[in-house]
Structures are given as structure tokens and as C-alpha cells.
Length: 64
Image (cartoon, rainbow, N blue to C red; front, side):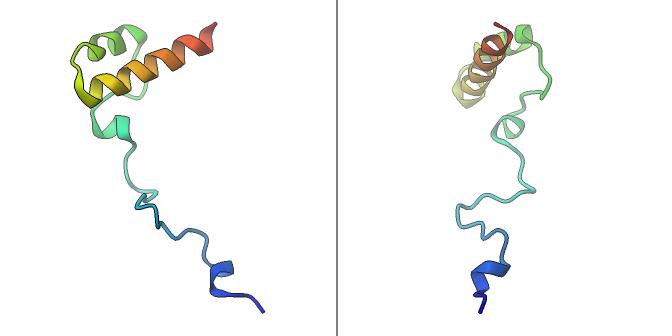
């Protein structure tokens, strides 16, 4: 006998919903921003700067 849990794909107990924007999109960082653009955003500080710094580091690490 199958339980109710077997029929449910997602329960969203973590509060995240698939239609919600990502953190970077909510803070206004363009999806395909160049490294130069990201470096300018980093200087703004706050959460937006933090996210831009992380994205720039990830892109630089991938190109090595």
C-alpha cells in the first residue's frame, strides 16, 4: 500500500518555491554579466556585492 508521501513530488517545507526568482535575480545582477560588470557591482557592497563577488570567483575558477 502506498502512502500519501509517495504521491507528492515536492512539499516545499523549506519555504522555497520553483516559481521564485534566485537570490542574484532578486538583487538585480544580470544573468550573463561580464566579469568586468561583476567587478563594478562588487564595489557596491551589501548582499548584491557579495553575490557578484561569488559569481566572479566561480567564473574565474571555471576558466582556469
